[in-house]
Length: 242
Image (cartoon, rainbow, N blue to C red):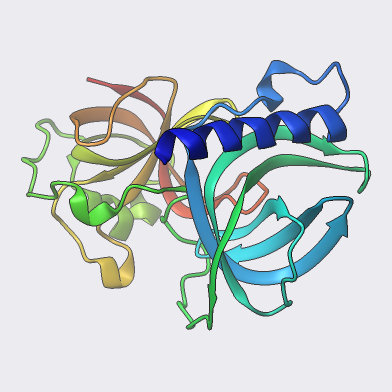
């Protein structure tokens, strides 16, 4: 079944590329990330040809997704599953270029409860693997004068802004090659999920895997907005991994 689904998604992506994008589409526009999913409140619906484009309000901000034609009500909450990420995707039908868009299949639709997140440290695109399956045992703090825990960086972000820090944590999410960088989420057992102090985003050119314990060194940035719904109160950029 999984193999069949993968073949179907590959075929679907090929159809989209062939029908909606110019033949000279740059390599960056090709699907590069593993299958992902996301859930959000529908802010806008655009039906074109055989597809429905959805502008969603997720816990990370506004993101675009596209599914096969479906009746989707504005204001409802939907889940787009088994998706592939397309970068710099141009829709001829809409005459619009999407810096990042998720093509997938429409999942369940439920009432959306308020989250109160606004700008957050949550995931730009959430892989299908459930977070509950990841080992989240506490990780020893990195050593050195500029070493901090996840919670310390999040809560002291104003003081640490534009400063270099070291952080040791476990990789709980990894999304490669989005907007020219790899997106890594680290946790070390500090902080709390209720106020988003237990998780921090790290961007890097380095690669890693979910479950790896790594030490990163990078620069703290605050109130960073990459566009396309990628906005964060605090993150670590241009990081190197050990």
